[in-house]
Structures are given as structure tokens and as C-alpha cells.
Length: 462
Image (cartoon, rainbow, N blue to C red):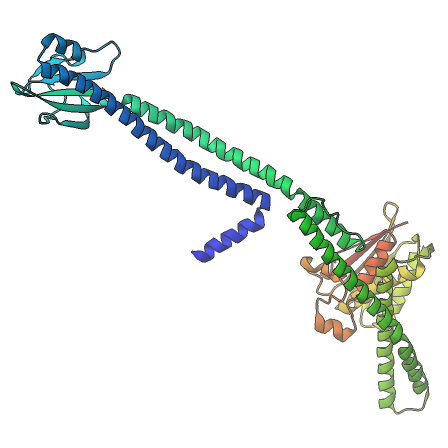
């Protein structure tokens, strides 16, 4: 039961915002409090009205009892009489229980109640009378001592007024309480929305800052309240993030620059060693080391490029570039490097304005990624729809799940760690490709290829 409740609460928190949850909570509290208050009011009103009836009937019974005690018949007839519209019933019983005086509504009828109190005592009850079916009456019986014995004065008054008042109060509460609850809920929703508006503005501003420029800061309200404290705290956090990001960029750039010199020395030494007379085993090891040093050189170039992008953006050297020439060059390169793959090309002649080196790098990174994951085939398509250049690179590999199609553009992300490491992927090719595409004003998207693998589509303005 507790587990179900926790899951329900968790589901509500996920589906409902803070504004709606707060409004529902406030409306719920008001509804419960209003229901309890309404019940108390109805019960109190009922008892007050009932007390008023008891007081009225008691006073009337006391008046009639005083006349009975005097033994004055004319006064008794006047005392038990009623005015038009009066719902009060009065009877006087002699010691034998016979009605000796009665109001007009019960003239000729028997006693309205079996109550027979002793002299000086007052007894009350609630009962229905024969003169009004299904209508409760409040009856007061007073014992009056006389020389003849104990007379009884019976006074009964209809409870209809009490019931009508109770029903009216209940009806008013049934209409008013839901209306009050709705008003409180709506007012709370609006008030909380206005209270959270500065927080939402800060959230949007923080999202823009984190995505574009870490040098910017959130505006701090002049009021020294929780919103101002939140803005100050977030600005402090942004300061630390900017400092950490700058330190990371400096480290990557410095480390990459420092690694270039020893790597060049290693590369030159391997070239000299490769030219010497070596045994087949040693020559194979030198060749493998040469490939690994080339791989490290590419990784260092990638890191330097990303550091430059983070620091000051890309400086494009624009000129007219024939994309179809780049596509065919990549076909020849990958066909030579991976003779086990079938490389299919459909390229229309397309010319764009851009940086030839960076455009070639976009295509090379996408083709390398496709070749790394393809089972048997890679296809390259170049088209020019609607004033754009559209490059499509597809493979017949395992594909990329929908949930990971944005993650693959994050730096150092590898969906298959073992496979990527084995074949040389560092998790930088796709992020660099997207950075270069965006710098040229284009977009890159991922879908499923006809062969079931991944399909990357780059759209560039012409």
C-alpha cells in the first residue's frame, strides 16, 4: 500500500507542475476545512433553532400553567387560544387525563402526548402528531398542582421551521463551499504563477547562458528575498562553472600543444627506423607504432580544434567548394582503407561557399563513423534540393537508438565502449562534425538507414 502511494505521489509530481500542485493542495485544505466548518455551522444552527423552539414552548406552557393554577376558566380559554398562522398546539388535561381546554387546531382531539409529569416538573419530547402527518413537533409537558389534583399543560410546536432553516443553511453551504474552493484554487494558481515568474525567467536565462555564453550573469533583483538569494547563488555557481570551463580549455590546449613536439619527434624517429633494414617482425611493430602515432596526432588536432571553438569560435576561410569532388575523394579513401566494405555513391554536382578544409573534415568524420560500424556497406549521397546542399552518409550497422541520437554529438561519448576503443574512435568525430556544420549555418540529423543502420544527413546553405 505504501509503495503504491509513493508511486502515485511520484507520478503526480512528474505530471503536475509546482503551480498546479500548490493550487490543488490549497484547494484541498480549504475544502476539508470548509466541510468541517460547514458541518459545525449546520449542527450549531440546528441546536440554536431547537433551543429557540424550546424557549418559546416553555414560555407558552408557563403562561398557561399560571392560568391553570389560578383556576380561572375564561382566562384559560384565552390562554390556550391561538392567532391565525400560529403552529403552536396547546392542551390542558385534568387529573383524569381528559382534555379540558385546547387550541382550535386540536379541539375535540385526544391528548397529543402521553407525558404526565408531576406537579412542578417540566418534560420535553419530539413526536409526530395526528394533525400533521410526517411533521415532527416539539412537545413540552408541565405538571400544575391544583386543589383537584395535578393538571398537565401540553404545548407542541412544529419543527418545520427548524428543518427549513437547517436545509437552507445546508443548501447554501453546498453551493458556497465548492465555489469558495474553486476561487481559492484559481487564486492560488495565479498567485503562485506570479511568484514563480522571476524563477522561470532565471531558469530561461540560465539555460541560454549555459548554452551560449558563460560570461553572462543573471540579473539580481533589488528585493532581498528568496528570489534574490537564488539569483546570487546561481551567479556564484556560474562563476565557478566558467572558471572550471576556462581551466579545462587551457589544460586541453596546453596539453595538446605540449604533446605535439614529442609526438613529432616520435613520428620522425619511426620514419627513420622504417627506412632501415629490419626483420619482418620489427617492421610490423614499427608500422603499427606509426599508425598509433598518426591516431594520436589526429586526436591532438581534434582537441585543439575543440579548444579553439570553445575559446573564440571557428574562423572560416570561405571559398567555392565542389562537394561532389570531396565525396568522391572520400569514396576512394575509404575503399582503399576498407576493401571489405562496399561503398556506394550517388553524387550530383553541388558547389557551396565554405571552408574546404572544414567541409572535408565534416565528410571524413561522418564516413569514418559509418565505416567503423558498417557490416558490409556504406553509402554516400549528395543532392541539392531547394537551394541547399544535402549530404547523406548511411551504413548497414546496428544503428543508433532514438534516445542516444543527441548524446552521440556530446564529446567523448561512445555508445559501444569496447568496439569504439578497438577501432580507434575517441568520441570526438561526431561532435566536431556538428560544430563545423553549425559554423557553416547548416544542420545535421540522425535517422535509420534503409539497411537498418545509422543515417546522418547534413544540410548546408548554397
